[in-house]
Every structure is written in C-alpha cells, then in structure tokens.
Picture 1: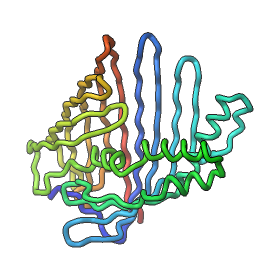
Picture 2: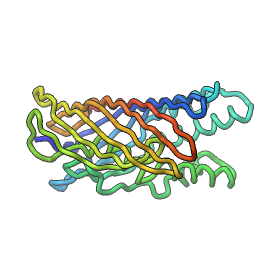
Picture 3: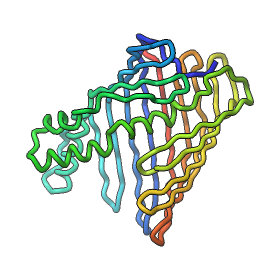
Length: 270
C-alpha cells in the first residue's frame, strides 16, 4: 500500500538541497540552497494528516559576476564589513535568522496533496518587528517575505515530493500520473509519471519522468525532470530523492538554460 500516512504523535525531519546553474548573456550564475524542516503530526481524522512544521535552518550560497554570497540562518550576525553590499548581506542573514523557529501547519491527504496551510498570517510583520527596522525597511522586509514565504509557495514546494502517491497497493512495473505546479525560478506546470522500479522490504523505489511547461513575464519555460525516489511504505516518508532538472527559458529574443539538481533526505524521529 503506497500512500501518505505519517503517524500521529510522531516527528519527521526533512533536508532539501537545490543546486542551480544557469548562464544568461555570457554570465554564469550558480546557486545552492539548503532548507531544513522539522514536522510533528498533531492530527489524524482517519483520512487526512495535520502536520505542524518548523523552519529549522536555511543556507544559501550564490556566485554571480565574481561576487560570492553566503547566507546561513544559524549565523545571523557574521562580520561582513561595512560597505553597502556587505551590509545588505548582513540584513539578509538577520532576516533568515528571524525565520528560524517559525511554525506553520499543513493538512495533507493520502495522495500527498496539501489541502490547507495556516500560520502565515502576521508572520511577516512579526519577523520585521523582531529586526527593529525603520518604517521603510520594515515594509520592504514584509513585501519580500510575502513574495517568498507564503501559502502557495510552500504548497508548491512540498507537493513536488509529497503529491506522488497513488493511494493504493502497487507492484513492480505499476505507473501513474500526477499534475502539479511550481513557482520561482523553475515555475510552470509539471506533468509527472511515476513508475515502481523496485520493492525492497518496506522500501518502494520510484522512477520519476516529468515534463515542465510554463510562461512567466513573457518568458516561455520548457523542461524535464528525471529522478529516483525512495519511499518508506509504512509511513509514506520520502527517505531520499535525487532529481535532475533541465529547463530552457526563452523570450524577448533571448534563450538560456537552467541545469539543476534536487536532493531530499527524510527521517523519522524516535
């Protein structure tokens, strides 16, 4: 039986790693983003699970035009120096540090689809207030937070590796399809096919084949995802996932490629 079935009263932790490489007008851009989440199952109505989720840590490194950027929510006050760009980096780090420990809640059905998200109302204002900013900076922080951290973006992020379950018994060779969306750099509609490649005890190994199509700011996006997902069938925990992403974005007389890798590690807490 393959379904999303986290156990009420248990905790689960996820580490998500995104590596992106692109080249625009001869300029190479490299970004690595790592997110850590801890989850506790607080409700089970016999069908859907309610999961309290905590932002544990964010790390980001970016290389752009000879400038290297390093951000880590566990080090919100690094000594960057006094010039404007370094002060901007210090503010980003403080911002990420203020997000650490914040909580939101998700209700998830047996197919891994997120039905509800709550807990974001007032979060941006609370974070901005904790940083002791002036009015102009406060409004800018609230705007940036709401653009990046909101119900829709969180839903898109988690459904990419949760909304994968057929909610039925499976055997080697079985396949099924799911449709989802994503925002951000790899925005678009994702049409995914999952095939059971192997079953080892409780572990079910899936092969993912996804096509991406979308349009954003007059830029057309086409791409694909190929990957392998290992699921603990007892709970629906994604133990590991390794996915290769290739996207071509074209518009306004330009075209550029984005190459990415996504790695996910999940574990149940004792």
